[in-house]
Amino acid sequence: MSLYITSLNSGSNGNCYYVSTEEDAILVDAGISCRETEMRMKRLGLSIKKVKAIFVSHEHADHISGIQVLSKKHQIPVYITKGTQSHGKVKVERRLVFRFSADVPIRIGDLSITAFSKYHDAKDPHSFMVSSASVSVGIFTDIGIACEKVISHFKQCHAAFLEANYDEDMLANGSYPYYLKKRISGGMGHLSNTQALQLVKSHKPPFMSHLVLSHLSANNNSPGLVGDIFSKHVKKTKVIIASRYEETPVYHICNDGGLAPQMKKRESRTEQTQLSMF
Image 1 (cartoon, rainbow, N blue to C red):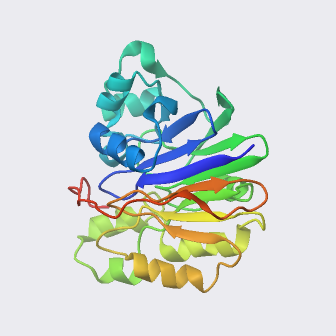
Image 2 (image 1 turned 90 degrees about the vertical axis):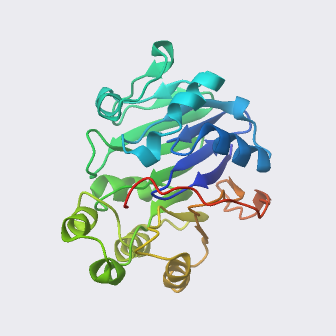
């Protein structure tokens, strides 16, 4: 068994991550519009009909803004905690709302999805592990620190979406007000390049074939900087920088370290409006 993954968008202007088998797919978060989600999946040759569920990590706008229309139009079940739904005012048809609990696997076709709690300034935030047979993918974004739960799950991943949100010097010397700088870097906000790199250097398993660096800040980071930092230290693992403005290729994840993208993406994209200061 193998998995297919892509980032449809990653950043403070919207987050949406796709994981599938040959038959079934899920989205983790839906922070871009239904129209953009459909367009990006179509460009990649992915069918929205395969998406059997949306799992919601937390209530911030860049993770939930597309859920209502996407779920209603395509009748997609939404897995969301009561606290997240209440605080985010996420409106979904009642029959399409399902709850999940930390550390309790949920089966969607051949996919097993396990949520675990994380450090982030939201009501009831979770990260996710998605597995099928012997292959596992982790979605680790919007995390204030790489806690023991993150480390434990990261060690099991054949591929991971890992946050590298900000460069510490750029944040410290940038224009954000002091309270926002503290919110981002204070242990309940986001993971810095340095923190992400330390996690990778210390805990990346030898069988991890793909690392998708995600949720880069528009103002306090850059893809070039992140690429330079990680290329010096990460070997035998394909490093991908997830974009704030376009989808990545679809990558085939298997337990023998396959590296080839399933298909290439087209080049034309339009910039989207930023939804938050992160």
